[in-house]
Image 1 (cartoon, rainbow, N blue to C red):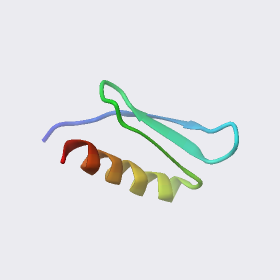
Image 2: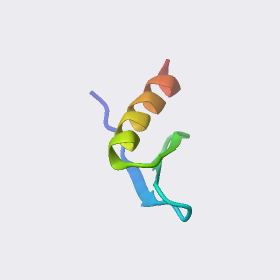
Image 3: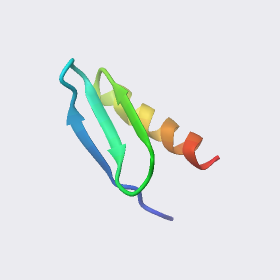
Image 4: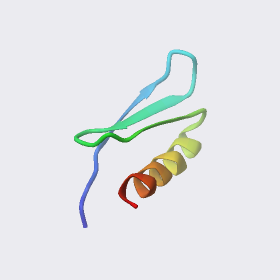
Length: 48
């Protein structure tokens, strides 16, 4: 299993943004729970 590390920051306009280190994967969401789901979906889409 490979590991992808994400940098998560609070967005200026509210919510959170996440970007993968070493990959072109970016996503954002309003809540922490939504962000976790968005990150998983972004990774699936990136590698399919």
